Figure (cartoon, rainbow, N blue to C red):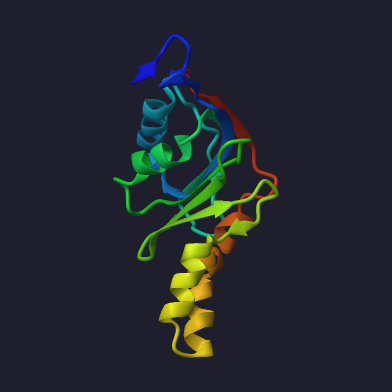
Length: 177
């Protein structure tokens, strides 16, 4: 049960955090729809500064820093899910009470969600590592499984798009609380 006036859940304050939405590759016709989807999560109008994506001619890219409640990154990713041709990443910073996370989507590969520490390092939980050790039959199996946990394949596919954002403008977004 949420107390909207106090911004709390079951008597506890809902922590606020921040993050970044990296819309690495978006067909120009979808740009207004993406803005509406983000606005639906954030509770206020969103107007992004779109620029050309050098890694994908005739496509656009945009970055937006956001502030909002913990869990906003997952909601933003869910709002973008209807368009499988988008390429994007969404980060959410860690708080004193929660880990941060990075969500990445690449067409044909799907979503990858990973926990991140306060300094941005990927954090792999003990149970996930124990599961990998139990499943891996060879050193190659272990190496492949570790690469999956770290999101290595997603990073490799995203890197050309990330380079297109060097020096690009960033929009600031805030969630209505």
